[in-house]
Image (cartoon, rainbow, N blue to C red; front, side):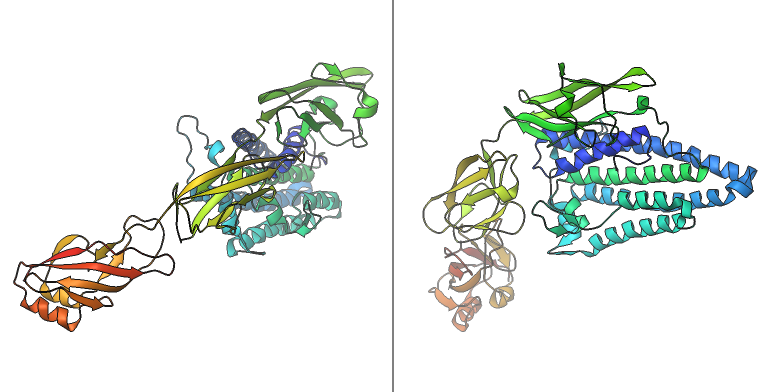
Amino acid sequence: MAGGKASARQKMINLMYLVFIAMMAMNMSKEVLSAFGLMEAKFADSNEATANRNEALLGDLITKGEEKPEEFKVPAARAQQIQIASDKFFKYIETIKNDLIKAGQYKVDPKTGKLPFESMDKTDILDEAWFTGDRLTKKGQEVMDQINLYKSEVQKVLATDESYRGAAESFEKTFSTEKVLNKDGKKIDWLNYNFQGFPAIASYTKLTAMQNDVKVTEANMYNLFLGKTLTEATTLNNYKAIVLADKSAFFAGEKFQGRVVIGKYANVPPTKLVVQGQEIDLSTAIDSTGAAKLDFNVGNVGEHTIDGQFTFIENGKELPIPIEANYVVVPRPNSATISADKMNVVYRGVNNPMTISFAGVPDNKVSATGAGLTRGSGTGKYNMVPTTGSKVTINVTAKLDDGKSVGDSKTFRIKDIPKPSGQMVGKTGQFSLPRNNVEIGKVEAVLEDFDFDLPLTVTSFKFKVPGSPSVTCSGNRLNSQAKAALRKAKRGSAVQIFDIKSKSNGPRIKPAAPIIIELSN
């Protein structure tokens, strides 16, 4: 991707894409999420600029096809096939991006015209839409099918001429969907490797980068059909110095580690290299690919600039190429993020979903313990079922990249299930009903304003008619004795249903609040 015969501008963008992939593996800070947004904007701007150039190139081909049909009619037709396939696939990717924004309920700021990059940290949007267990969902398979359809349509055009073999091989590498080795040395599906478990802004940027690949492919194909070289110029004047950091953000006190390259990985030996005002020893800094390794203290927390200069010899003269890049230093994490998904307390005897994470540390290096706490399914997901006591403490430990461990804890209050309310025909408290509705009605117990789904079954209650002794009823309806007392009650009488006892499939439930019913007939 960094090499090949792309334009100098696209070489720079494609190398930025490599940085993007390396950054995606991190648990992102707000600064890094914002950096993803800025990178996405650069890809979007590049796509617009490339689209304009492509339109001009295609117009040139069509014109030449009309003026010199014997030479350009067939290439112009092939270019139009490429344009149709690319436009269709580009628009399909745009629908995926729109679906991602809609699912995350992200809105463009009307003042800045930008998405809320720093809050686009959800990882479950594409996970739920595209993946299920170790298989793809219907939507995930659709994405792969669309990628393969685009590849097939382009390769079908390139297969018409043997001279296009090199372009076909380069295109296949750019849009390869072969399985990828993960950090554990296991091969996993391409879609999982590139999109599963990543923040929304990372996936959104990756999709924009894929659109950039589509536009660059169009440009390469049009130039190929015009019989031109696929680069705008071969001189080093049009190359850019690109910094590839080993990771996207660094803790205060760490050393910056990464590489800086000129346009593409090429053996173009410089005569001098200066970074941050210091001249670098070329004998140890330049590797076999032509990349210069960097190693210096990253400085304090905040955004920093890398500046320097490569010096090459071209046509017998020194050619300076500036190095310009930015990186962000974030604080070393010292506190965990622990939050109950339902509320800021936990309830005894029920399953309390929780999300537990540690800023800057991936989920597989975070462990949490606590009475009644168990691992759930999903990144950072846990279940808490407290039993005894009035408080429970959750302890969290995280292992950092340098091998050191940090820990934190948080205490939650344990509350009993609140007292339910008695209910009949959906009404609670005091209300009016016809006598017949009371006679056939079902007595229920409900937990009002309770965030958990805990069905209750009424086992018994007492029924009282003014002037008559109370009647104890089993189950959830009036028995014959209670019905007989109800028939004797006068119109306007207030009958009471109280001492309503119920049970759940878990914790013990307190008797429900009574209901008072005024007979309307």
